[in-house]
Image 1 (cartoon, protein in one colour):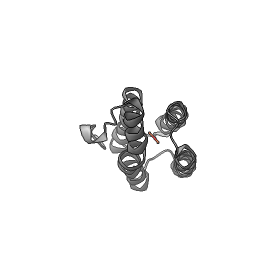
Image 2 (cartoon, protein in one colour):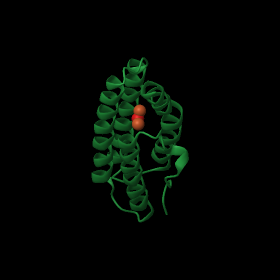
Image 3 (cartoon, helix red, strand yellow):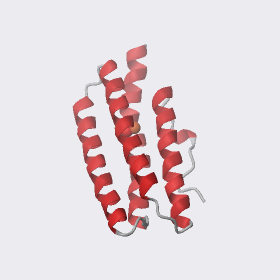
Image 4 (cartoon, helix red, strand yellow):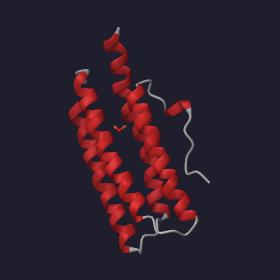
Length: 131
Ligand code: FEO
């Protein structure tokens, strides 16, 4: 069972970033599938962490390319998310590689609130800049 299913409310209209968000969601669902199957998920958790770091770097480069004025605040939020992610990943590793509900709550909150509330702002700026 998927943790979350992609729908258009998550779409920013910035094709590259939407594609990367979908990849992150697919990895989240892979970890969730492993969790439900009772599997050790350390490797997939590490893959998702690396994918998040790459996505944030790509997104920050995109925001820079459109002269997004809130780039620095957004960057700070990314750093904080990576720190929280590392904390959860460490706890999972220490727990024998089993994911937990706190981790999935964090992922869902990130996906929904960060994409819809924070990423959506640069997408709006991008649309305005393109006019
Ligand atoms: Fe798509 Fe700001 O992360």
